[in-house]
Image 1: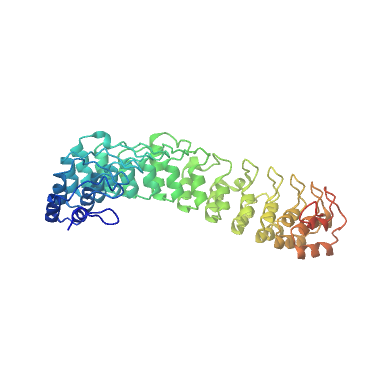
Image 2: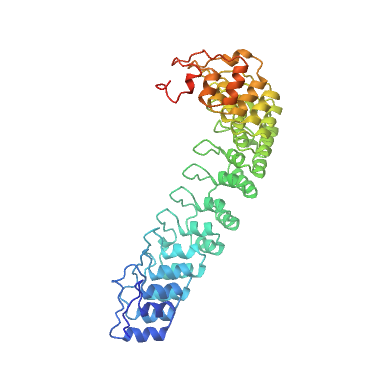
Length: 469
């Protein structure tokens, strides 16, 4: 039998003996003259040394290391035998490789991670301690991978409390940030690792550092619904300064915005206990806008109770009120709540559109009915292009909304009203292929002779192009 023969994957009998920890077989094979323990011919497969380290056989490692010149050879991913032993938590193998001069500073190709990174990812605390002690190198503690992740960040994200404690005892930098500006505390909150978060706070992790989007730990706790942590973080923030500092991310959004956007009622309650949070602050797309846009009626109710009904009329940077937002999304419960707090029904945004017009354009039939029946919304308002709610519903093919509007329409002049392009609702309904609507408009006296700015009658507006007409 020839000991140097390899299978289709490039593995020889030596590889298999190393992988399965057969020390005596290894010794016999390595002593054969026809066995060449050289993997340069098979760069895509792991060496016997890699396999022994990965599978945790320290005795096989010792045999292989007797004739091994390169202990830090990388596999196809650039991982050394030490990296694989650390990844799998094989402490004996880590010790053996370190004693033979394996470098704990080697990094893999894909992520730039050291053996310490790989050990902490799986919570192999004993391996981490060994790597740090025997390498006697403090820079490994805070070594960053290609994404700026330190061992502490990876340990926190994985919820490995013992490893986190060890790294902090070894003076790991608690406030280092990765390429997204996220610190270990940010990651702990994002991943819901409560014990690790507590450990970081005990080591004075900053709660006011912002990530690349300006979001602090308080923002992240609010956005993830961690009400108890949010309460503790706010207490710490208030104890560090006479009053709660402004908390706005780069978009101007406060923790209250984020809690309302995701519907975390408990977090909203915690925030509203703070006097500094009981006012409209930051981005003019207010927390109330955020709550009603996503149909979080309980959060919206808490805001209105705490801040008063006046906030129902606040406009954002484009002049849109919370009622616009709720109508756009078609959330009837939120619309009824806003109407019960005297939200201005016919307020228009910068494009001249009311909440009713937005609902009609989006085809929110139930919303259109509520606004017309319960709130008496005006059908005669026009936007900057001269469109009424009827125009918008016809233009966007929202048949149910058109029929609702026609049912409630008392001003018959709106049937033949023209927009800035001189189009009537009949032009737009015909172009949208709304047969039932066309019939209803005609029965109500819609003119078939009116021409638009292109000289087209409603009949010609059905043509696929101006040239065809």
